[in-house]
Length: 587
Image (cartoon, rainbow, N blue to C red; front, top):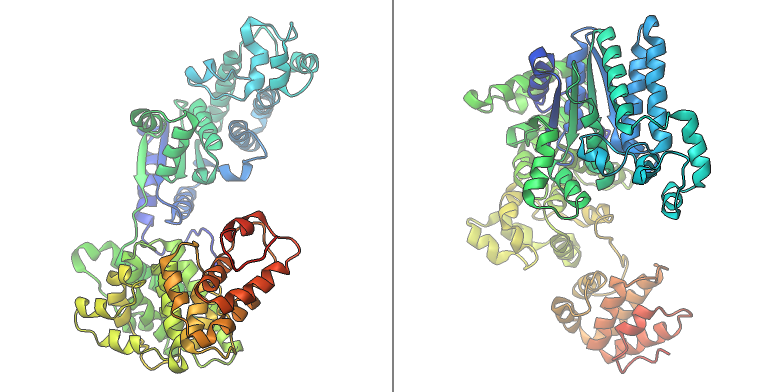
């Protein structure tokens, strides 16, 4: 198993991106700077930040590094005040003894703005300053001084008695001073402390794209407060599309130009984390297996160095290693490790090119964790199932949709002894057209993936795959074990239990195709499964499937009628579902 967390060890040659960022931060002529590290979920943005931080720390004590996780504060604090507070506290902690008083003053000033919700939502934002909520209306609303006559709207926005708020404000802030003057004073104190430290302030802002739109925008607005101050660099890791969506939501469907301009004005230098290709995924899978191999740390480090160098020169040399080279660097003859690494090398093209994976490192790691978990269960259940087979089935599940997974599992469950003839025929198919003709309808949309997947070792023809289906029950639960139903009816019941819509023509054809002599037994099996789930507050696929079966076979309808009428609490959605059926006696 591998931890699903960020790392500061490079498996994907992201260090090249990190080195570029660190170089820009080190260039005094580029500061102050705001830099965006852009990429989709799971692509490695946080790990890239970790690599940049490591590189900066290698340069000695020249930087004051601050990490801010925007998602951590969501729902607990105003995002703008939280960012200012984190930075102010970091400066105070690093300030020399002679500047402790000024650093303390900076923290107090942030607290003032947090308590009061100081800045006015409209005017301050227009001047380029962050804003701290509707309570700011009490500072400048309609030209009123703090403590002067406050109307009901003021009280509603403040969330407390206006006179008490005014009293609190009087203790914290000179009412004659405009909110923008407080901001100016904050910037001045901030700049003085930073100059006295003789360090560059580098703020890493992470997980911005996990936040709700309002929090994302608030954090970006707070960054503006620090822009154009000397010796500062803000590095923002985010999914660019998610941030643009947040801008769109915040400004209530603005035109595309405003959405684009907003982010472009805040982020001066965009850097994109590259999507891993086949070679990167090969190296990534190789390293995942290596770090769990038990080989010495020095051997694993040597392998990583070799793989990174191989990636850096792949533009001219191509792929320069195979499983023998890897095993040699690790100094291992372990056949299990060899098989794992070889399988990873073979799986890499599908993982890199599949639209469902798209080379995403986090998805790859999660899939490999699934393989290891299933392998562990297989050992405890004394299943004679090779990990390569488990990995191949997990790869299939990761690269196709739910209907395709159900179709393949139905092929296995309905086959004699779990050995579907489909595998033998598909693995022997010579052309893409021949393969298409063999596939069930649910698999045909994934022909481009399956063309390579069927050819991927190990071959599955003649293999009893029922244990593999059992292990994948968290994807599509394997029900009805020990049932006396024929394989074809068993497969039909499995399909009906997952019926998404009552009007499904496929489900209706499936129900109609059941052997008449097994219709009642099939309904009994479905009812047994329905009883296992006590959740009736919303529509259920298994109930829809049972209704479709009842409409196909009157004897089965009688049995379903008996069960449904026995329910003590019949939900409205159920009554609506069967209101036009004559076989039901539901009151």
